[in-house]
Image 1: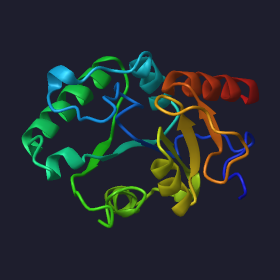
Image 2 (image 1 turned 30 degrees about the vertical axis):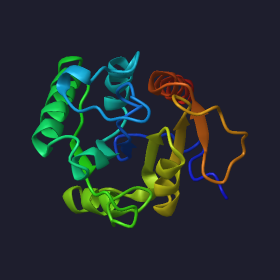
Image 3 (image 1 turned 45 degrees about the vertical axis):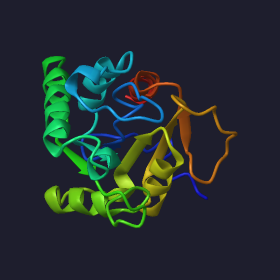
Image 4 (image 1 turned 90 degrees about the vertical axis):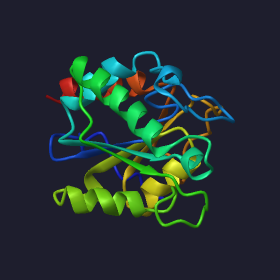
Length: 194
């Protein structure tokens, strides 16, 4: 599969960044859910990364599967509280999230549950300027990568819960060990070009 973003196509403010949440922005509790603001802890460097990325991308949205709500493990209100705490901390640190999309469905077949593309369609509805060919998804699961590829986005895999994959990989364009490592690489590449 062709790499949909090359170094000569440096993202700028006409590009959109799609971010998974757990394991990308905040520490993931593998096998469990973040059910309260108290359990929400940013990944090392995530706030700094979002500050850098906010200066590059025109639109930044979060697309997150939150099955814990559908399963009754946590309430929609708790999810909103967590998102509120996250958004406030990011904006206080100089970054931004333009919108958060959460799929609370339990069924894998649900249109909005990644790797299905319903949340991308929602984002396009809210931000008509989104061009998926000028978009990147950053996530730490193959379902995130598949979601991106279905929409012709560039894909960045974070090895926060999986061993690195051997590249080239049909689903993964680039891989890094953290959001900050990728953000710094992107910034350096832009400074070199610029």
